[in-house]
Amino acid sequence: MRIKAVLFDRDGTLTDFDRTWGPAISHVLRDLAGGDPEILRVLQDLAMFDVERACFTGPSVLKVQSPADYSAGWAQVIGESDPKAMLERIETTLLEHCARTVTPFDGVVDTLKAIHADGLPMGIATNGTEASARKQMHALGLGEAFGFLAGYDSGHGSKPEPGQLLAFARHTGLAPQEIAMIGDSLHDMHAAKAAGMFRIAVTTGAIERPVLEAEADVVIDTMAELLPLALGRAA
Image (spheres, rainbow, N blue to C red):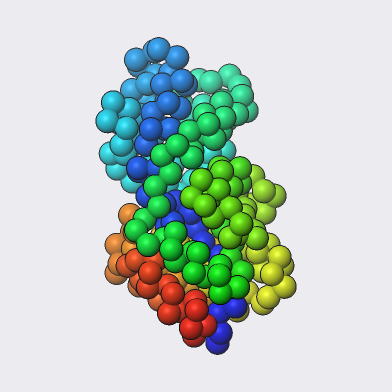
């Protein structure tokens, strides 16, 4: 089989989630708490996040769920009367801060530029928003590299459902089995399996290699290892 296009997850795959989103999440939680220390404590517990240190303290749902999913749970727990307005506040704050601290993993930018220069179609499928993905890729000088970017709000659903992946296949005009999905989470691997795509897992996220090996066709440790697979076209 030949890889004819590559689709990437964003957080934990291309960018360091903690360093990229930590400062923004601090702003989000402080804003939602509105100066109430008890609400802030509850939100920190739910998010598994330390506002003072701007870092995650455990396997937070923020790393796999969409803002619509995790904010709904927060709204219920803290008694928010308008969950939709709460979601809008979260997304506005995240978008404002998303490009300021975007931190790609080593080798990511060079690898993506090499794949783009070779003419291989590339896309992003994220459970974040489409707008934040576009803003971050532009900040990294990769605004022209991706012909397809989808977030949970793009109309294709969110992972682990395969909607975003199948939309990319339609965009490229390729069969799913001709496309490689690269991600760091089980959501990515399960979506790729459901879509019928070649699964490449990267160990830069929170999932340990043995777990990924059971769910992926290939496991890599750095994005630079993707080049022989993508440019060599051999899967």
